[in-house]
Length: 402
Image (cartoon, rainbow, N blue to C red; front, side):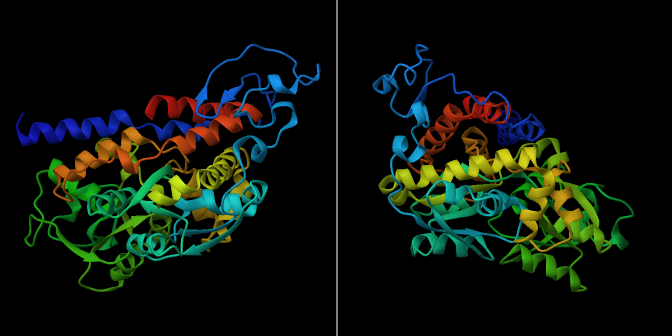
């Protein structure tokens, strides 16, 4: 297979293998069907013989690994967290709302955790925070996470944060309306962030459109900055014509008169692109599985909340991302992104193949650095407590895309 055909097949796989976009449509009553009818093993979902153990005083018949069976707490079933003081790092993005909601709605506290949230400027800072043990969990873009892993950084993905949510904006003198596509970038200087999903997506679209990168009237000149904040601020310079964005920068840009070049959610080659992932030191995940299961349970509960209470979710996010609530609503619920805790392993593996094809990094064995067991254990335990349609949608997605 030649390189062009190979590249097209990879792009097709990106569209087909991921599916977090379907998760954002659930609006069922969170109080419905709360009786746990299925006993769930710590690492598996398997039906068990129905028996009213508690009524008959036979508590021993309850299966291990099922939270709230016969009144047991999650901690009693899953084990006490090895560490309770947790530091989580995030970027200036609505993409990381699972942490904001989990904090504001008390889900971390419910899981026996005391969590501190700290904003950082870049993926490199977040990885440094993990490796220096200043952070326990970080929300990091999928592309930088993959490249850091390939370079020998001992960090693992154990959950998701957001799908899609990126794009590019351009000064209004170069475009009279939104979403004209990458062709409007010809002959322009474009600010972007190296080692980012925004940059990888732009390169994919330029390659598909047969547009070269470089200086010239028919080329796109990419100018790299250290952070998304810096790339966006570069639009104030006369030498920069367009810039990459992730949520909520697209909404901010439109309010300031810029035009959207494209939203990645609307590009066929980029549909359901896994963006930010939950990342931790590999050794920490192995040494403190109960702690990270508790963290994941809080994120899963936060996802449920985002699907059932839009107004309060927006207010929770605003405490950390101080922009107009209208912009938050657009970024979170406008169809440009989905914030889900699902690890979305298949989609991320396909993205890994894509960035290797683009020359971002060399191939490597990702299996030791992709932990889906923690998410499965956390989700199974929550389903045993409350198997409503929102939680079931997470289970179905995980089973399809693990």
